[in-house]
Amino acid sequence: MVLDLRRQFSTGQRVALVVVGFAAASLGFGFELSKDAVTALTIAGVTWSSLMVLVTVPVALGRRLAVRSAALLEAAGYTPVPDRNGRPRYLPPGGRLPGHGNPFAG
Image (tube, rainbow, N blue to C red; front, side, top):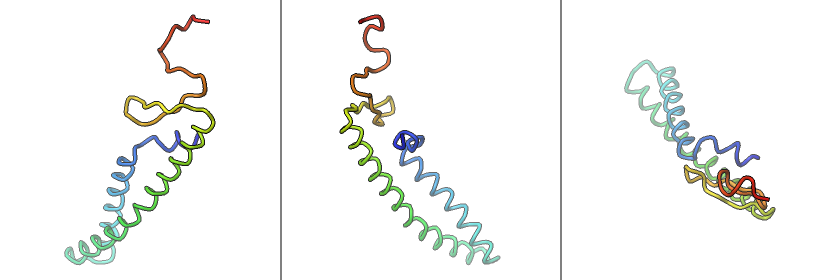
C-alpha cells in the first residue's frame, strides 16, 4: 500500500533529512557563487531560508494522502492499530494481532 511504503521514516525524520540536505546544497551553492566567506554564507542563508518554505508543501500533501488512505482503509473494514512506535497500522477485517489468541483454536 502507498500508506505503508511512505512510512519508512516519520514526518520528523524526513524533514530533518531535507533540512540537512538543503543546508549542504545551499552552502555548496553559496561558495560556488562567491569565494568571499561572508558573501557565500549570506547567499547560503538566503537560499536555505527560501528552500525551507518549500518543505511545508510535501508535508501538507503527505498528511492529506495519509488521511485519505486511512479513510479508504477504514471504509473497507480495516481496523487501525498503533504499532510499537505509535504509528497506525491497519488489520484486515477479522484479523488479529500477531501473538494474540490461541493459534490452534478453530
